[in-house]
Image 1 (spheres, rainbow, N blue to C red):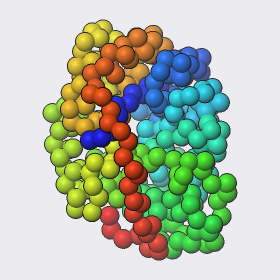
Image 2 (cartoon, one colour; image 1 turned 90 degrees about the vertical axis):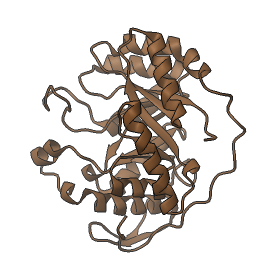
Image 3 (tube, one colour; image 1 turned 180 degrees about the horizontal axis):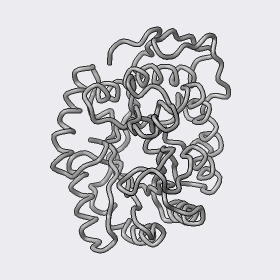
Image 4 (tube, rainbow, N blue to C red; image 1 turned 180 degrees about the vertical axis):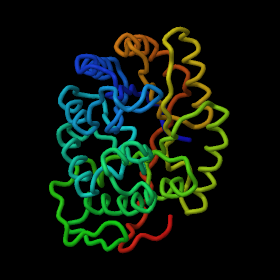
Amino acid sequence: MNHPLRFGLKASGQSITIDQLRAVWRIADEGGFDHLWDFDHLASIGPAGPDKPIYEGWALQAAMAEATKRVRIGCLVTGNTYRNPALLAKLAVTVDHLSGGRLEFGIGAAWAEIEHSMYGIEGLDHRVGRFSESLQIIKSLFTEERTNFDGRYYKMTDAISNPKPIQKPYPPLWIGAQGETTLRLTARHADVWNISGGDVEFVAPLVRKFDETCQAVGRNPSDVRRSLQYGWDGKDRNELVELSGRYLELGVTEQVIYLRGDHPVDLAEKIAEILPDLRGSAPPAPAPSPPSAVLPRERGRATSP
């Protein structure tokens, strides 16, 4: 892998106050982190149930864009079924412009059944097919003057989407995937593969599977950066440094530390203090290589991934 090791903070927007979010954003921006994240859910997730306070993920990203000056921002990851792909493309371009070209565009097929049932959101039963079509449409809206698409789930007729993103051809595409079909989509489309989570023993075989998937679709595995989010309880700094190093050995160069718990600002401050040690665990970064060729855009009805 010839990608530099980068670190981010994630404050999800769930069970957290706006003042706490703003404080975390400031720490990420001023503390030297490479990226800053939220997530995309309409109801709270986890064992506490769906009724905890939670803020909308793309509105938060717009606020993050205005509240920061340097750090890159994104969502791990956007649920595709929640929005029409044209709306999502427009949201992404807006945040890219608000941030001066700092958006990292995270997206996945979505999974939370209770949100779909509570709000009457359709599409979870065909989430991978919808996701495949959305990726094609969004990339076309980012780059083409007109988008025409006649798919099973979405149809676009001379669709216009202006302005285009600041970042060319579009913001880095982070795809969250773990299953066989979504891994194939990731291998075809992603700049960054976001591993859904898990300990080192779980991630290691998944990385090997993804390498094989890339080769199967004709993509060089080293062209796709690997990302993962993980937590830390704030107690043993050596534990965090060691864990980061173990993930790095697996090629995970985009590492996002999730601020779980009741004191996210205190935890963010602790991680900021350790950040030089985390960076020190990586070998020197090689000179950047030229960008890889972009795969041809697919048109018309989506084929099986």
